[in-house]
Every structure is written in structure tokens, then in C-alpha cells.
Image (cartoon, rainbow, N blue to C red; front, side, top):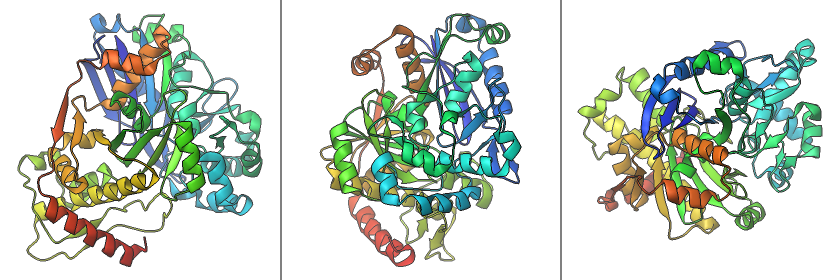
Amino acid sequence: MYCGIDVGTTNTKVLVFDDDFKVVFLKKFKTPVISSKEGDLLSSKKLFVEILSSLKSIPESTKEKIKAIGISSLGETVFPISQDGEVLQDGMMWYNKNVLEEYREFLKKVPSDVIFKKTGLWPSWIYSVFKMKRFYKNNKELAKEVYKWLDVASLIAFLLTGNIAMDRVLSSRTLLMNILTGKWDEELVEASGIPKEHLPEVVDSGVSRGRIRKGISEETGLPKDTIVTTAGQDHITASYAAGVHDETKLLDSSGTTEAALWTVSKETLKKYLKKAPSIFQAGFHCIPGKYYLLTGLPTGGFCIDWLLNKILKEDYSVFRTFKYQKNAVFFFPYLRGTFDREEIGGAFFNLKDTDDRDVIISAVLESTAFEMRSCLNGFEKLGLKDYEIVATGGGSQLREWLEVKANVFGKVVKVLSVHESVALGAAMIAKIAKIGQKNWEEFFKEVSQNFEYEYFQPDEGEYFQKKYLEYLKLRNRIYGF
């Protein structure tokens, strides 16, 4: 059996899969985000305590059969650790905007186009480098104790095994990694002011980080020969489980954020770097030798959470009675800005006194689908054609949302029956690490034979296509893009 851990922005999940990758255990808890004067931080101590508690709660008959653990996580959040293994400060959450000053300072030193050509990323305040810079600026004495920086997945791997290294996929979210050389970029590191010796070795996803510590085995009851690996960033991990491995498929991953992901070759990556479209990000895929192009929103499922919890004072049980309504309301889902324009906000337009709960929910579902449709058009301009859309993430459990997306996209949307696709991908990569598998594609074909899918068909094209074009016009008038 294999364990997959998914540390998400909102929730963290620990799952165990049998040898056919069927779920046999699931434990979910709220990701321990704490508020502070530095904004929202991810508590390393609380996170690890909860993960250990989840591992301990696995039934003994299941636990004794676990051979490996794979860990995937949110990106951009990083932790400074000392040489004796102490976490010196909790990690700033990826959406924490207290780093805007550091972000602007950095851009004065290195032009945006230079950063893009080196990293495949257009500068944004979300990347790890600005969190690191803020730590050094505000913690002069504590900064002297820094040994290495670790991403979230690698921190958990370190606490479980003692191995210190950064996952390659997550290294591409620092804004310091050269995507063509696969090494820390000298110019960017120098401009950042971060001591290069504080940046760890970078290793591929699916590489064994070693066996769990003796004390961890004794505390949790896991077999002492259980190995641990990292499995990359959540959206990318999910793309492996969903079979989005080449340029004929596109992933629509709906969690707290909303992401569209295209797995590409180095040749396509180089074409992207030459064309330099501003709406995309590039990075290392968890599949060795492959890359991804990514675009999306800081808010996807978060918009639905926000609407239900803060505005309607409801929970997801509302969808038991919800009925989708065609409507004239427009919602713009920029509750956390966009990745390149943090200053903008969301908005409703054209609300009437006759609009009820179902109309407002319908407008929110439409808006995220419209944004993803715009992303698909951007991919098509880069060369994507004759492609299949595969949906994953928590949002793929909302049938109403998937029906809207199929109609907005004008394409069939394929959904993996295992909604916890990040944890599934992490568990699959754990097995790859355990058995030393080199051919990831052959491995996927072998283990996915029994995977089940559901297909959502477009059937209301005219209304959605007309409203999508109206949405784009209104967005341009209000936001200028």
C-alpha cells in the first residue's frame, strides 16, 4: 500500500491506496494557517503534528502494509531551517501580500523580461524569493542561524526522514531557478541578496528521500523501512494522476485556486520562452524531463467558499437544492487580485432586485468558467489543438460547475472518479520511488487500467457563448484586459 499526502491551502489530506490505487483510508484536516502581524503563516509545528496524528490513526492492518509515502503541497511557501533542524519561522502563505515592498525592490534590480527568460515566470508577488527577502530584512539575528530553505513538501520529508533537499517542481516557484539549466540562477540569486549557500540541493520528484526516522516509525506504527518522496506542487501532481502527460491534453484543476495546465516538451517550452505571452507561467513537471505551462486564478473554488460562507452563510449542502439559472448577472472572481495585478478586486454587475440565491451562485460558477475559457484560448494561440480537457480537484465534485464548464468550453469535460487526485498522484509517485521505476508513462498505463471517468457534454452552447463574449467586453472596460 502507498500513502499520499496533499498539503493544500485550505485542507490537508492523508490518504492510503491499495496496490490497485483504490482508496482504503482518508483523513482530512484544516491546514493550520495562523494570523500574525506578518499576515497569514503556515504553522510548521501544527501541520506536522496533524500529519503524524493522521498517520497514527490509520488502522494497523493497513498501516503495516504501507511501503512508501509521497508528499505534494501548495507552492511558494518556504521555511528557513537551522543546521540542527529547527524551523526558524513559520512560512508565509503564498497569497500573503506583505511582501509587496520586497517584490518592487527586486524588480528595480532585474528587468521583468530577463527574469522571464531565465525562469519561465513573469514576476509576481507570490513567489518564494520575496518571502525569503522579507525574513532576512526583519530578522537580522535569526537570519544568522539559517542553514537551508525548504518548500512545504520537502519540509515534511525532512521532518520524516532527516533528508534536506528541495523538490525540483517546487523550486521553480521560487523565482530563483533557471528553467533551462535546472540550477539556481547566479544573477537572480545575487540580485535577491539571499546567500547562495542557504539554497538547498534540488532533487526530482519521485526520488527517495530515505526511510522514516526510527522515532517516527515508533510513534506512528509505520514500518521502519517505509520510504518517503516528494511529488511536486499540487496541480502538477494531479496532472500525473489524471493522465495529462503530453501535449494532447489539458488539465483544469479546481481547488482553492483555479489552474489550467499543459504538459509540454523542452522544445515547446523554448517556443513559449520566445513568444513570451504574459498570462502563462512555466515550470518543471513532476515527470522527469517534462515541463508545464500554467495559467489560472488565485481564486477558483475560493470564490464559492467565500460566497457560501461569508455572504450566504451556507455550506455546500446548498447544492442539494440549488438549480442553475440562466441570468444577466456578471461576477468577476478577483477576490485576491490576479497573479500579476494584486491591486484589483472582484465585483458583481447588473444585479436586480429579482435575483435570488440560485442566480448569484450561477453567476459565480459561470465567471470562473469564463476565466478558464479565456485561458484555453491563450493555450490555443501557443499551439494547443485537438485536445482533451480533464478536470480534477475539489471543484470536480460539483456537477453543476462541471456542466457549466462543458458548455462554456464547448468541449467534453472528462473527470477522474478519484476526486483526491493530488493525493493519488503523490501515492503513485511514492510507488515509483519505492520500485525505482524509470518509465513513468508505462507505469501510469499499468496502474490506471481500472481508473473510472465520467464525461460532461456541452448542450447549451448559444447562451454561454454569447454571455462569454459579453463578459470579455465588460472585463476589458472595467479592468483593461
